[in-house]
Length: 335
Image (cartoon, rainbow, N blue to C red; front, side):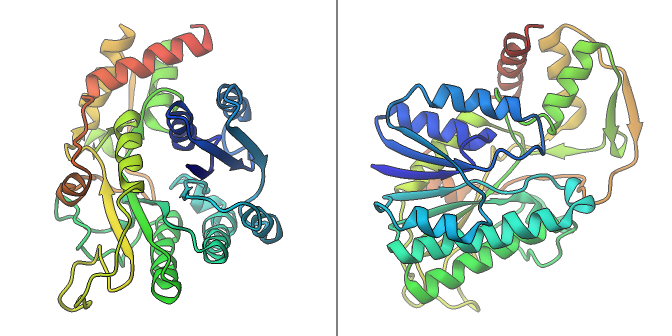
């Protein structure tokens, strides 16, 4: 099959592309290689992908309407996996326009491309951050997501609304995946696992927010990729008789679905740090701080509808996943 993967040089996009190429598929990857974090890491991921003859990379900005339209004017894609976006909750407070360009204009451009090709299935990245001020656990797709606490979260909720509109108007099957704290080898330097591992190995203190009273539904990258690729073959269909008053918020009378994609097992941040200490063989010096603006104290995914749809449950426990990351980090940076 022929896949388009946006954000192919990013953490999840790289792993998804690699898995598709290993399976013998053809992948066109796009990325703008922005400097939100070290570009050399993105280039290293692309070097690995470029070893596959079936991989084509195009440096392209999602907000470039003409470039995206030109991309979709060529040979049609069997699947579009839209993972490119401006990431980061805290960064959105200082750089809001970057999120409007990449996450709103960029998502619209992808939807328009899918409309032009009548794409068989668009799978796109949403986020657990859409749950915002919600405190009832676990987070369910049926919960209200109308009270985000960061612009990043608001753009991801907007992506879901935009996708539903295109599913309704043009019959394009779309599936949104609300990712919960993805971690693993080749991860992002702005994420806690990367920052904590680097600091602990360097002998520097780590900043622990909300005084350590944080829980996250950490989900290992291999489990994310397996679930995502299984979802890509579960093409949404319009649900007969569905209505907003009586139906699930994750479905529609249009060919539209939204799933939580997480481990379904929240872990205390202090236990996560302990796993890093065990993997590195070093103790962390902890700098305890209040919670940051835009952050939430806990996330926990209710995932039974996803597991039922794809017949798969996460396999990698946090201790094992963290150890794999630390092994990769030491090898990649020569530590």
